Image (tube, rainbow, N blue to C red; front, top):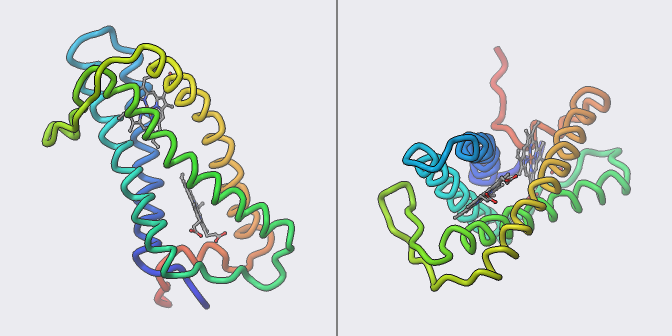
Length: 176
Ligand code: HEM
Ligand code: HEM
């Protein structure tokens, strides 16, 4: 069976894991009053978000040279089109969200990356901060919807069609 390459698989699962962490990080941050704990969890959210952005850029660069394996036989054209659209929108959102995050976080101050690197901020611009905030906050709902659709599609392939779609995103399994 044709699979995604090891690099594509690793980046896929690392991105998914990073998202599973960065979302709770910001929920925790927002529930603390202003102070060092809140600053810490925002820093963790922002650094993880920047990492997701870098991973998506790496994925797309890799994907450009290594085509995705074809869909299992019997996958309908509508299902395939929907999957491609979902993937494209996911990539797009995961590129836009870190940029809008940076436009908020770097608005008038530097952005610490895991407290090891200080990424440069830019002069404060009120309107830009408000616009970036709206896009960032609203995009989260599109992201939740797309991830739900993506996972539901995978579950459908695994549980109903049983056509080996998930195996394409996993290393070969050794028989027990
Ligand atoms: C794929 C990456 C990212 C995702 C999925 C994401 C998601 C989110 C979510 C769900 C929220 C909560 C919004 C709400 O209040 O309801 C949020 C808030 C925030 N994020 Fe991100 N984020 C990402 C990357 C970043 C990056 C890279 C930065 C900064 C460098 C950043 C900075 C912020 C800030 C400052 C807030 C607070 C906004 C507010 O209180 O209105 N985010 N993010
Ligand atoms: C939570 C964040 C996730 C994101 C952002 C995400 C994103 C993506 C993207 C963009 C692709 C297309 C890869 C390409 O062709 O370039 C993909 C493929 C795939 N993902 Fe995810 N994924 C996530 C989670 C999951 C989970 C939890 C599962 C398993 C239940 C999963 C299973 C798969 C499978 C099987 C493929 C290959 C399917 C195909 O080619 O249609 N993903 N994912």
